[in-house]
Length: 280
Image (tube, rainbow, N blue to C red):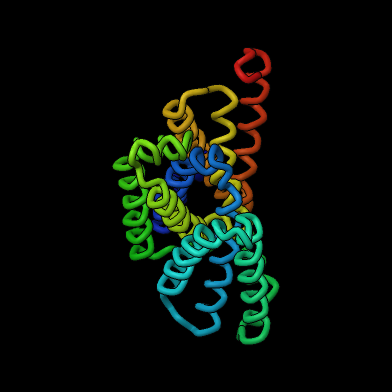
């Protein structure tokens, strides 16, 4: 097995893929804790559907660099979901449903109507659940991923205290002079960046699992915000690495394998917490 892995790592595309896998997993775990605690985890699912719709538009129009379409549309949708969710006539969950399901439906319709591919069903399935496209990354795409990941990490580190305050008590944060609306917007936009990063890895339907599972797993054992974030990051990176190598060795789907590894670790932590009495 070690010889097989060593053989695969002779190819640059495999090294590129591992870098992207680990960076995406790290970024997803950082904001996952905040999204879960604020009950915003549904935003990740909604934005993933929007990203699918944007990808469909890019595919139909024949744009080579699909990130030009996907990134701005997903970020704009994050802002719209946040703004529309405050409308008393349209509640937050309804706003997410409107935008995400609408984008998913329009994207699928466009692919069926205008796609030139002979295997439409296969293309849609690969986009929704991830595919081997992670092993066809170019150096430019890897650098783009590194750049976006650096932005996400810097935002989280620089605004850590403000994000912590807004996460636990938004009303108190406003009372102390923190502009919670601005930081909620930062959280939403950063989540959109993570969604775009993760699309090629796990597909648009499995992105939420990459964000949520490491967070709720860490919460089974640890109670402080910082401890949960650190544990979540470690779990996410380890599961991503395990999932990647298993996928490489046995030919399983990369995204689904990583999510399965996260599920397995979640159940292990549940067993540990039940014996230790950590989680009540």
